Image 1 (cartoon, helix red, strand yellow):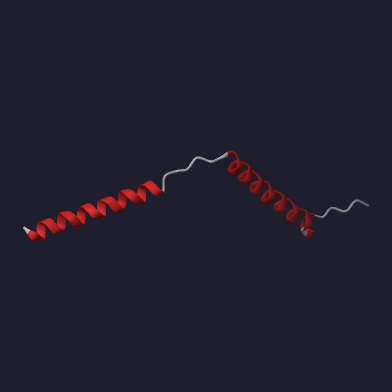
Image 2: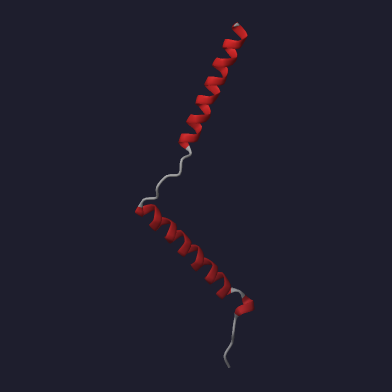
Length: 64
């Protein structure tokens, strides 16, 4: 019986750990400041890409 009890205790502790891990990874609600930060990061990335395209020699257009 001692082996069976130890097995049950082991299973219970593993189950509790897995439940605790699951709780910590729940999806968090985004605050307004987080949304603003995400939008500004996307905007900065878009501006950076646009400037790289504009500065590349392939897209230069010369008007004579």
